[in-house]
Image (cartoon, rainbow, N blue to C red; front, side):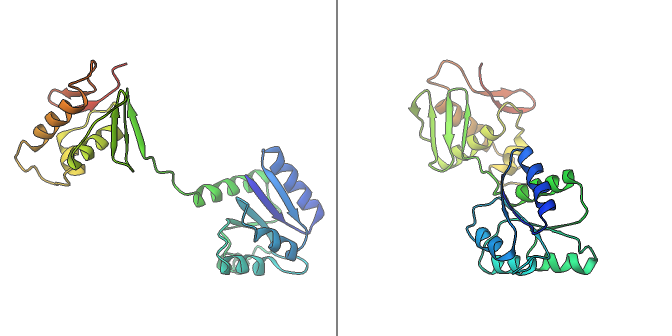
Length: 225
C-alpha cells in the first residue's frame, strides 16, 4: 500500500514510518497540515494516517476539505484526544477510523488493512472457463476448443450459472430459482428441454463431455481432466 502519514511529532512519525516500511508499504510523510493537505489532494494514496493536532492546519480541517473535494482516500485519525466527543468529531469530519495514542503498531497496521479492504471495489468476475470452454459475460460469447458456440439468451444464462458452480451438483430447484426465477415447481419439462439443447451445442461435436446428469440429484459441469 502507499500511505501518507501526516504527523508533526518527529518520534511518532519515525516509529510509524519504520513499522509500515517493514511491512512492505510505501510511505510518505508530511510534518504539518498544509503540506499534508497538498499531498493528500493528489489522490494517489491507499490510506492516510492523520494526527488531529497539527501546525498550520489541523487534522479535522484536512479531512473535511478532502471530503468536500470528493477525495475518498480512507483516513485513520491518530490522536491523543481520545474522549468520545473527540472520536465523534473525527468520524463526522470524514474519518473512517480513529485510534488513540499511545497505540500498538500491530493494531494500527490491522486497522489500515481493514480500511483499504473496505474501500476497495469488489472485483467482478466476467470470464469463466471449464476445460476447453470459456464464456465472457460482457460480450455474451461462448467458445470451446477455439470454436464459437451460439447460444440463445436462456441457454447462455443456464450455462453461466453452471459455470459459476462448476464441479458442483446443481439441483433442479437451484436452476428454477436462479435461471428461471421460479420459486415454485411449474410442473413442466422446461429444464430438461434446455439442458438437452445446451448439451447438443457444447458437447455434441467434441470428444469429452462437460455437462453431466447426476441421477436423482441434478447436473454438473466439470472439467473432464
